[in-house]
Image 1 (cartoon, rainbow, N blue to C red):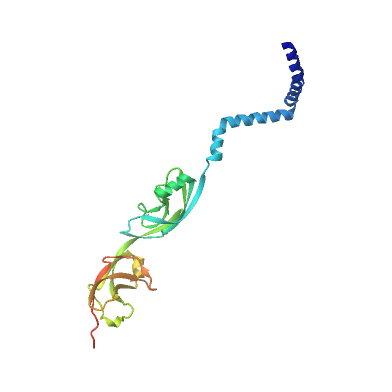
Image 2 (cartoon, one colour):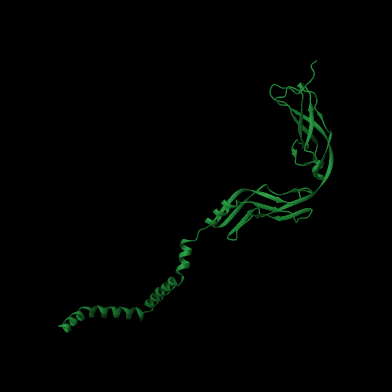
Length: 249
């Protein structure tokens, strides 16, 4: 009985086995077939060995670049003794790295740029701008990357003070007498070129809404020949001004 069943199974599967065997022989002993088999084996081996690396590259590669505009530039310098020129107020910064790392860096620290002039000498200096507290897993490119900065020594000069009276609606300058200033000259500290550009120093007295005698601290402002404000260091930034109403005739 068993032998009969065996013969039946053999008669059914023998043709299939013979055909499969011939197919294998044709592939193995055929040049194109061998190339195809080698390629399939190599692909299987590569996938089994480098699967983790391939998975990371395909699914975890979140590298990106983000450009941030109008980033303020902080200056480290001896501004007490030197006048600094050539440093831009703002720059652009491009951050490259994992998108999550960039987001965390921006949220925790913000993006700030420093121009360090602490080791620079008097005159012209080429200085690199750097991003503060940048983690090692993020790269940054500042635009511009470097700036030419000039350090000019500050000197002192004495200037006469004139007065400018500001009045509001319904008021006239003639409603007041000329303000009396507690001092007529002020010492200014700046580079020699800046001092030479000063044409007038004014004490700005605000009389808006004033209808009686008053005393005010007037802010000092230096102007160039075109009437533009010049940034300088005043020995005293304010001067006391006494203002009286004009006497009726």
